[in-house]
Image (cartoon, rainbow, N blue to C red; front, side, top):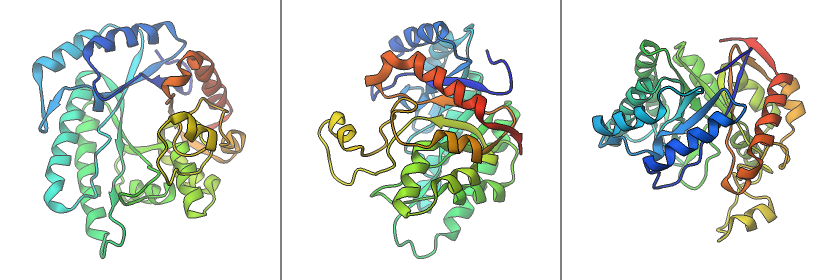
Length: 301
């Protein structure tokens, strides 16, 4: 479990068919690592169906996760979009609520929820943002009742719609004004989005940092992949996309981030590492901890 002024962990492996048979060995491995917690990929574990918890599946997950020496954070649905058009929003809300209920049963400290995106050239986006704020505030009450924090993650955007810059997400979190609705600052996402829009990455990261109780640490080169590559190694060769590289392999200016950003008390640093680098996991964790040691911690909570 955690000791000190921050916690360090990593996201355990996941794929599109994450059977429970894989979960136990992954957690056994985590207990052998020098980590405080791991992030469970709830989006890849079949425990919610059509917006409702599957009780017997939840019992099986609890049997595997209970009694461990590590803590948990939970990553919610990747397709969550609380900026959806009104007729599609109820299912997003139901799935989010159900997964929060699962997270509470598993003892999750933080629940990572993706921020929404809107179609390009949306005529009047303001009502969408109001609806997102209302749902997050409602879910914040549920999180608070279970001792959790919802950490809303900044995205890098793409062909599907406009994603908020970190500074824009910071304004939304401030507008919601709920102590259990904070931010997840994904450094690579922020790097990619800032570079794409031609704004200062360091300024953007510093703007969201005071709200970021949760940090996703992984490296990239800050350049989005605009065309398809059949192999991941080709994207790496060209330095394109959200590569989830080990700390320091890309070009994110980590020392400058440590100097510019001030995080709230008791943040959690989670390294999201791509499978090709799994043999380097302990080194990546150690470097993440060293980075956390350099950061300013203890501002706004």
